[in-house]
Amino acid sequence: MFELDIETLKEQGLQLVDTAKKTAIDLAGKGKSQLDLLNQKSRLSKAQRQLGALVYSLHKSGEENQPLVDRYIAAIDEVEQAIADIKAKMTPAEVEQAEQAEDTAAEEPAVEEPAEEAEEPVEEEPIAPRGETKTCPVCQAEIDADALFCNHCGAQL
Image (cartoon, rainbow, N blue to C red; front, side, top):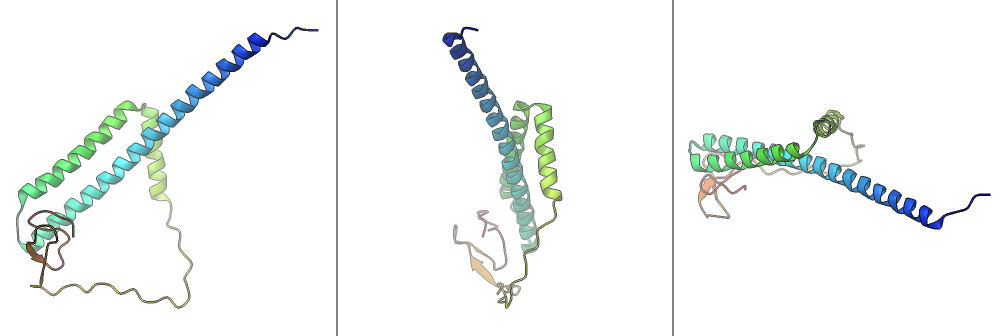
C-alpha cells in the first residue's frame, strides 16, 4: 500500500488552483483587450460618419466652419490613437484574431425577419422644402430644417 501525504496533495491542489486563476485572468485580459479594440473601431466608424455628414451639411448650406471640422478630425485622431495603444498591448496573433472576428461579423448576411401580417406603414418625417429653417436646441442658431448638425456649434440634431 502507499501512504497518502495530505500536505503534498494540499500543496499540489493549491498550485493547480493558482495556475488556473492566472490562466483565467490572462484569458479575461485578452478578451477585454479585444472587446476594447472592437469598441474603439466602432467609435471610429461612427465619428467618421458624423464628420462626413457634417461636411455634407456644411457644403449643402454653402457654409464653412473649419474649426468645427477640425474638432471632428481631432476626435477621430484620438480614437485612432486609442486603437494604436490597444494594439500595442496585444500580441500580433491577438490583433489578427480580433480583426478576423470583426471581418467575420461584417461578412455574415443579415438575418431577414419574417414579415408580419398587416404591417402599419412607417411615417417618415417629410424632407423640408428648400429655404425652411429650424433652431438649434443647443445654441439657438437658425439652421436648415434638414441639417444633421448645427453649422454654428456642431451639435448633432
